[in-house]
Length: 350
Ligand SMILES: NC(=O)c1ccc[n+]([C@@H]2O[C@H](COP(=O)([O-])OP(=O)(O)OC[C@H]3O[C@@H](n4cnc5c(N)ncnc54)[C@H](OP(=O)(O)O)[C@@H]3O)[C@@H](O)[C@H]2O)c1
Image (cartoon, helix red, strand yellow):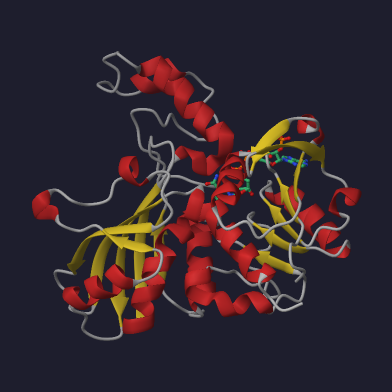
């Protein structure tokens, strides 16, 4: 690619877009022009990136003229319609929506795990995994490389910003309605206080946990649960890996957490797993329960790595490990991984 490629950020005004602009300001400055694009609602707004104010332009075919790499941080249907337009205008697209993730002609890339797949992109599009998958996959990929993963059971504790600006706004509004009250002691009392408008969630998320994320799929599974299974299989190259997932929304603003039960080919040692996790790029081991040390979203938010704690061998299975992982869903879970993929593409020979 050229010495200083032109980058476009489509969806620059959103929850992920805002974090992406911060990340682009913090990482090595390899880009020439950075163009900011959003819906016509935002055209003319100015946003800060790399210390300068840049005007947002409305999404259009011409907005991609001269763009080398376009990062899409927009809803699925917008990405599905516009990513091929950007490719037709000569850009490589890195898409953070669900529109292309399972397309066999679109690589699903996590630089620490399967960077080599980025070069094979027949549609000119590279997909970024879902934030819940990304929260665990760097640590899991490192353990898989050593021990060979055979089965996975995970439960997520997902932050509201995983549902974008609307999710954060809903939690903040609900917290203001329940703060300082005795709510949460009788059936339905939180629901009555919050009212019918629960934002993008099916139940109040303040003072609550909601065992649902996404839309309904077959046999009672949610779309996000199916996504985590399908994406994990694709990224690790294990198309028949048995995976069971339960996705749960919790009243955390940003940073997803997961409990992970991972079964491997043979017996695993906790010391061996700790050594791998302590040295894996992009992973921080934070695991000393005797000293009260384990990762929590309140400490992890705003940081780049995947944090891993509570590493134990399964009580009844010497081939399985239990872990608790936390990762900022807007950074590694979205914007950071997108930026890392873009940097891989920019570094390709011209
Ligand atoms: N939040 C997360 O943790 C997370 C993690 C991984 C992946 N993702 C994915 O990343 C994408 C963005 O998510 P988000 O959470 O940042 O959403 P968001 O906060 O709702 O922001 C959506 C962005 O898309 C733009 N947009 C919407 N409709 C548009 C249109 N018709 N034309 C052009 N731009 C349009 C918005 O522009 P305006 O401001 O002008 O409306 C805004 O910049 C989604 O596909 C989401 O699933 C999110």
